[in-house]
Image (cartoon, rainbow, N blue to C red; front, side, top):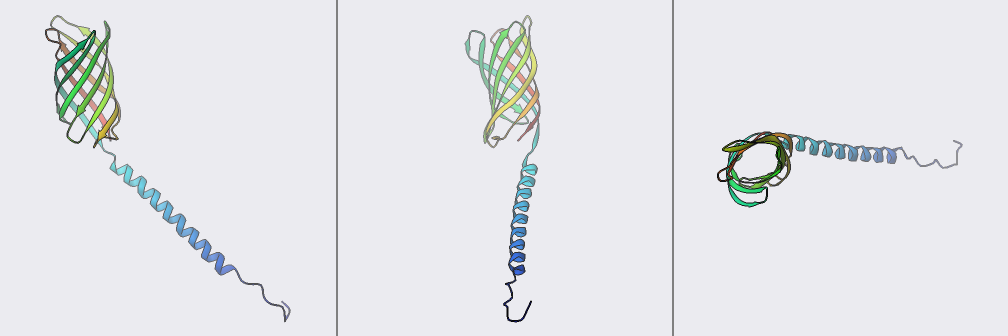
Length: 165
């Protein structure tokens, strides 16, 4: 530059400072996001269910049995089942287990076979919702089976499989 002319202001310090700030901000966002993902990945747990329920008839409406009782096994608590005989060979069910701290609800479908003293059913169940401690519960393809006593319509039920929460 010729003498007498002022030098243009240097902006490299400002640009460098801005770049550093943007870099630090991006690193903080990335660290925060990966930390949240790691926390959510490690906080999810898998429970191997093996539940048994002995229930008694509360009400009956046509081919729908509303039953209540207690569940024992991996998760213990009150259990309610609404079992609907939809054909001579098929049943559907709404199952809710209410352990301490929340509840887990699922829907199932099963084949149905009449016997002389009891009927039996066997199929699969999917967890549709949970509450409280189990608010993030989900699972599908759980084994679902049981019996219906012909004398009093009391049912036994067995649910097993993997539940994620």
